[in-house]
Amino acid sequence: GENVEQHPSTLSVQEGDSAVIKCTYSDSASNYFPWYKQELGKRPQLIIDIRSNVGEKKDQRIAVTLNKTAKHFSLHITETQPEDSAVYFCAASQGNDMRFGAGTRLTVKP
Amino acid sequence: EAEVAQSPRYKITEKSQAVAFWCDPISGHATLYWYRQILGQGPELLVQFQDESVVDDSQLPKDRFSAERLKGVDSTLKIQPAELGDSAMYLCASQPRLRGADTEAFFGQGTRLTVV
Image 1: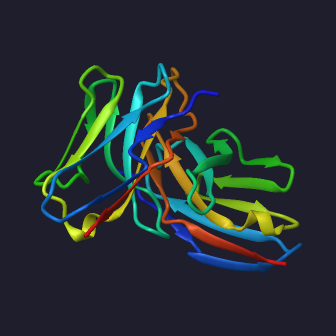
Image 2 (image 1 turned 45 degrees about the vertical axis):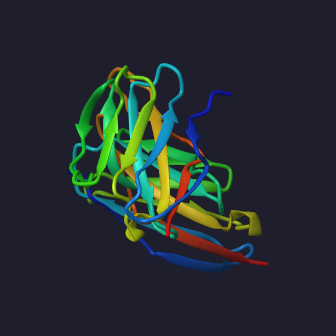
């Protein structure tokens, strides 16, 4: 089955700096790669996703890149703000079979 | 806005007791997942249903865990007997079935289980 690895497990940045979280996946058949944000005590919620026919996608301060050949994808957050502090999870999915990475705890220091 | 409903939100149980969690997915969603999330870690898949059928339960500890989705709608996850190591958040998620394209999974609020 699919195996998703996520790095780093914790990330601390200064407000205004950029943050990058990286994931690798094992199943070349995976074709959908969502990123979820989970604030303390809340449910994971989708913040951005990318499909295998696209190399990059951007939504305001958030962008995701996908390298299918290398089987890795990354989340980029620019101009970070304290409210970006949360746990971020990547996932890889194929045929409605979604597997998650272990998560990255992002702390943005004011 | 439609949401995945889970109950109870919190459950405290003594070890060796039985406990059950309930999930009602978004109407029309064919795929239902149960995940276990230990504090600070990513969701770990326990079982996946497509309609009423189990697609993947390879990570479900079947000696104590069971899950069902009899009518292909709501689902129940049971633990019997509960152990201290089962303390975690149990998340339910659902996904619509779209021909040829995966899509977002929607999560419920989760059930936080504490085994004492």
